[in-house]
Length: 79
Image (cartoon, rainbow, N blue to C red):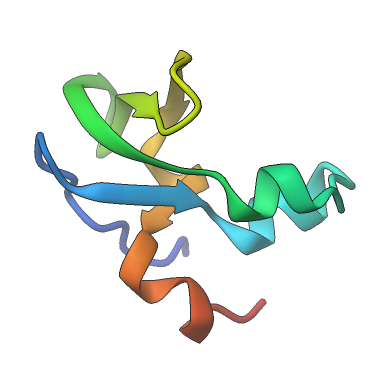
């Protein structure tokens, strides 16, 4: 059973989930330190949502909610 995922809201500050970055073998400092704000949330399938993020470096991308975490929670993440 999957862990419950935080329901993101527009304006929340987010980062990429540490477990996701490890699973895709992305060990770059850039990805791990990237932060941004949620600009849109839309349902995708079941309990999953597609979250649009405006990153601090100016680009916009979308990610599944399970691949993001609140920026304030990054230091507490574990596998």
